[in-house]
Image (tube, rainbow, N blue to C red; front, side, top):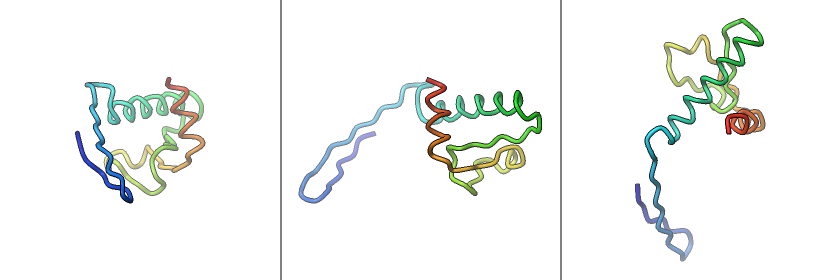
Length: 84
């Protein structure tokens, strides 16, 4: 992916490349797996709180009952660092 973005009087050339299984989708999948494992081990209720998804957003309507979007930056950051 390549794009030129202008900000004020300066133009920036941006380039992004996602390697297979190392992109945003893979990271989100790994985070979801980690959150599901944590929820299963701690509450046993089957409801997963996802701190990285904006509150009220439903990614997959089939799974909306088991995933609760929280939109909490601090907890998202902690969960992400725990995966690294």
